[in-house]
Length: 294
Image (cartoon, rainbow, N blue to C red; front, side, top):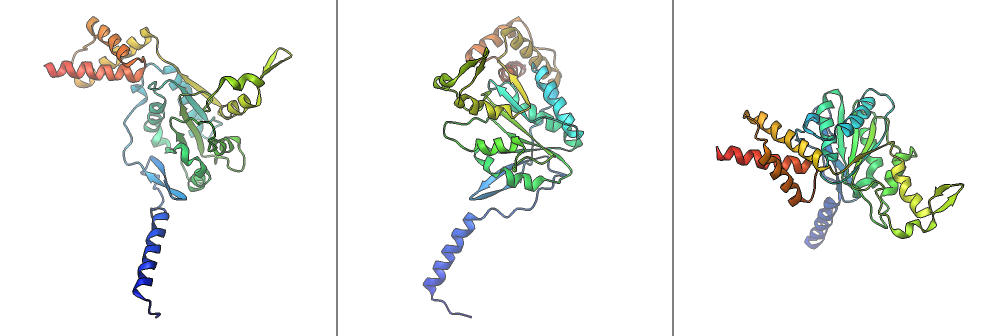
């Protein structure tokens, strides 16, 4: 065996240590029979699927005030689970309206029928081919979730998502659908100058190249499901439902009253938002405080 000088050995050890930091963490394949969700974890030039040990216990019945949206997305997901034609979905709209919670609730409702969820951050969309390769052929149906997605000017990772939705060489396998949540309908920011290239042809508006490029990504989602801010009446109905549901869970009479209604309105003003999240936060505050008083 070659005798190396101590300084050479020390240098080799430093090199090996540096290489170890670049290599992905040594993890085994995900056991999807017991794991219902995973995150893609980027590591240096690659990454790996990391099992999620605990998924929030949100159920479809817990999501109040968005019955129409729930129905559309649930039916599409059931089609997918049955092996029937189904669409990739863009859930867009105001924050706090239940977009992400709906996907988690679907997982909790249909995991026993083979539904699984993989969450991928925007920066990791370039790894979609590797993710698809890891789950292709698995006897499960996967929703690939990209949560709170939007692209800024100059970002190019959307091109990989576009290719995956296109059915091109990077297309998702048949056991994968892509669900995206976003505050933006078109995912890419719009500017007043984008409309300068638009023109009217035979009575129809033809968008300029800038607008066409931005619309084209969203167009590749078969379903657009909109989540809007609640009207005050709708918000108050949901707030009442939340209060009554929490009271039932605690085994106490309903704490909803005219005083609670006024407090719920003020709560929404303080939050500057009328949505399901605001209603649930108010209900938790109101019922919890009342129970604490005894």
